[in-house]
Length: 270
Ligand SMILES: [Zn+2]
Image 1: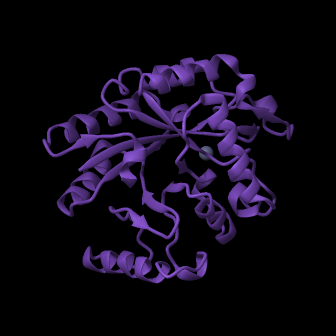
Image 2: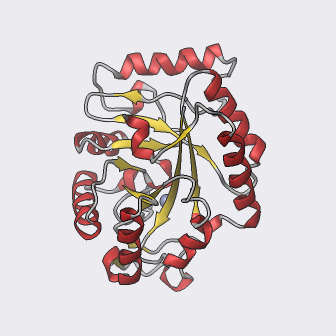
């Protein structure tokens, strides 16, 4: 069983110290997949100074030289891998970035090549801002051949670009829901990779304020009993001592199983 960890929202506004303080005792145990925003525009987020929330100004990641150097160092030490987390992460009046931006195709291509150039590492995963993707947003990610690490994405064929795998994958998820006694609107994470023509998708379990170690352990146990894999998704800017303790308790628990391998998120798709 593979277990991975994803952390969202690293951007120009992130200090290396903020990431280090959360992960320095975690990335000794497993690599962390940092979902990075290449050209962040300030938005309401405790991890961003308030004076930048409404300016509309875009900040390229490499204008934070200290962070760029730290990322390169962490990547070289295999402490982190990097995923693409939108382009600006801005919220539009009619939706989140990858629901409403007029040019998702350009954002995926430019964001990815920019990060690859300044970090010197390949980018193989896309994480949608707010876990929100329109049909066109998903088509753009798929066309770029990026795998998708999400939480609670819809598998309904009407919400997705069409290809022959759309329907069989939808039925797979529905069968899983029925077999595990879930009802139509129950939220759940499908524990296997779903493969499409040019990309694959995997869902994560959220670690947010209020999540307990037992919540994660329950999800992990179910996935393990079904031969699935497991990914935790969180944000460094909201990891306080309580959540840090939750993450450690969960990792301690998962470490007890000899069939568990802690992997970089990219390996979930192999
Ligand atoms: Zn985000």
